[in-house]
Length: 480
Image (cartoon, rainbow, N blue to C red; front, side):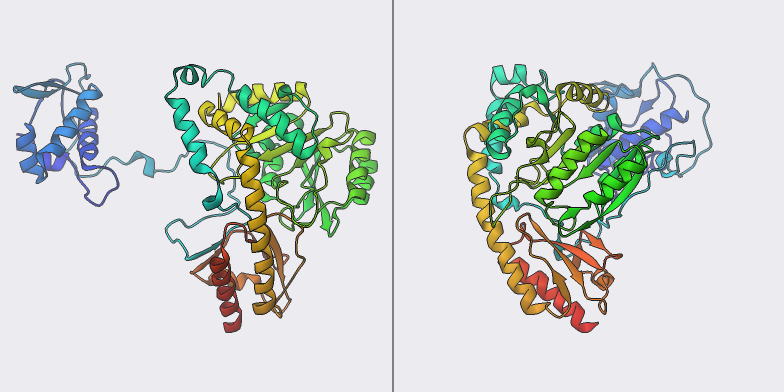
């Protein structure tokens, strides 16, 4: 009998189930010619004894091989390598495992440098995100309940994947009313594309607008993934400083006089990462420049629904822009970062092309989830949630403001934002923000070493969690 203890290599610490390790080892032995077509394999009882494992594990391994047509099982008689396997030349006995994917891919391919590296092996006790909603407050249970009801409804099942490349009509129709009531957007369902989050919308827009001859203006500092997306098109990225009134429109106007500008990416409501709001004067000027110099405005409005001190400014997209604005939003900031549903609003012809391009990389979205979300919007559940969440986030912002003044007043400076889910905090010159990175208990998602600043997302943390985070930062700075 062949030495199956050398043919089948089992690592009990591996994340791969043992029955699959058995199947993989036998497949490799067939591929390298060690086991020929028609070769009878040991019974499950014999192999279990040889490998010192449970017989049911071997049976599961054999069933896996049979399902993939590598072996033939004749009940109560024998198990043999399938007769359809080609004859292969046997190789030398070796205990070495075939781990092809441990090798680098050495053929030419495009390299995209990662923006950041996350060490998932170490999970810190305190995570300060860059401004996420508190999932504990979200109506996720109601959303999932509706989702499950659709998956058991014959009509809903039949229509779940019809027309979902642009997004289900139910969700787009619900958004027409919702965006009109909350943002003053006068649109139809044909002006909306549903995406897997705001980042996909940015990607699609940039791929249709930009190429190696394009110039795109962004704020400095800015959302890193947006910058990366624009750069990958080959376009020239031009950074304009962001001050307390938002991106500088005088600098944009001067650039327009010097060169052709293809697009301006702007986050007017609460700029990322600094949280400042673009002033009314600059909003009007940006729209004027867009028409005068014929450039597109990509308006990222990721957290429009959270404003605390007064009614928010309406988006640029609600003004007179002659179709030059591409408006991007996301439900991830309303409900749950894991809920990857965003939307793009633009002129019909642009949405048509974005839909066609999106189909190349992603044929359709989740029709059940989109329709479940449409139900929540139509029933008013989303509005009720946002009203409750806005009140709680407002309280958390103010509570964090008190904590920062009590504990970190001599170390930091900041401007309390009028809305949003984060505070942009800058350390005084004598304290280095990088010192916070050395603490294993604390992970700050958005940190800018050049500006000596970090973004403190407060919405996802209750008062106890906020106090714990501020105390930890205070302790680090005291020790410095």
